[in-house]
Image (tube, rainbow, N blue to C red; front, side):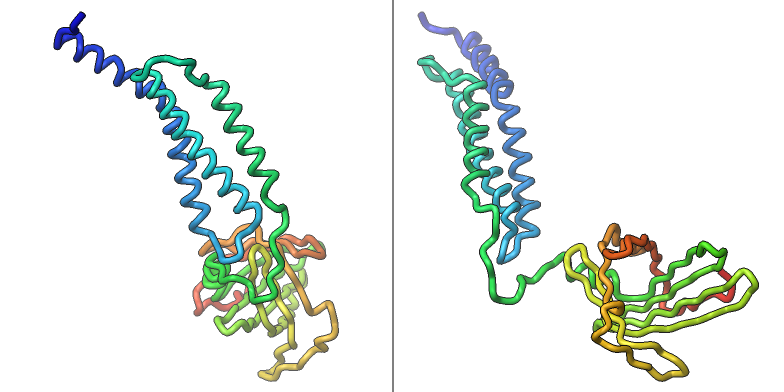
Amino acid sequence: MMLTPESTIAEFQRRRRATWHSSRWWLLVALVSTISLGVLSWNFHSVPDPGDLRIGIILILVLIACFVAANVQVRRLYVARGGPMRRGSLLATIATIAVAACTSVSPTAPVSWSMKAPSKADVASREIIIGRWYEETTASDGSKMAELSERRRDGTYQATFRKITPSGHVVDQTEVGLWGVSGKVYFQIMQGYLKDGTVHSVSPTDADYYDAYEIVKLTLQVFECIHSATREHYIAKKVAQSFRLPDEI
């Protein structure tokens, strides 16, 4: 029996709609996997993190499985039926592949005896931190505390602290040293006090002059961190280079 042109067109339109309905979810998952791979590759370094490597392998396998699943769904509409694969079987297959990928990747990265790979994130964080930052707070005794820190491009810093007691007495102290950032860790090494234009060095063997902070938030306007040892919380705001410590806090 021959199909009329009208019935052929209707059948084609029916199969086209059925093709879209049967494969759209697989294509959507494939699209999300592709975008995720792009984001993952943006932060890729020469020595990849084992977790990122595992995620990348899983995404690639899921991407392949999605295209296979979409192809099977489409073939069901245009090829004679011969026991097509069910969606549940496909999901079970994808899950099995993903679990196998997780267990096949070594949980630890190989040891590298060379310098660490360049980090775009560290470069970006460093560029943001360079400049002047201001913070103020109130001590338990009611004294007003303020800090103005300038972190320079050459890795040195100068921080001036001002304390105004409830009676109005003002105490200023300035320290100098080195600073740096690596991943989510910001660190400072105090090298001395600045008094009357002269740096009075401190002992580099004193552990109290070495400080590390966990970065909580870092933007162009806000630098929020927690001291790794004392767990004290600090929030500083970016200010202009012309900014000076206020006489009143």
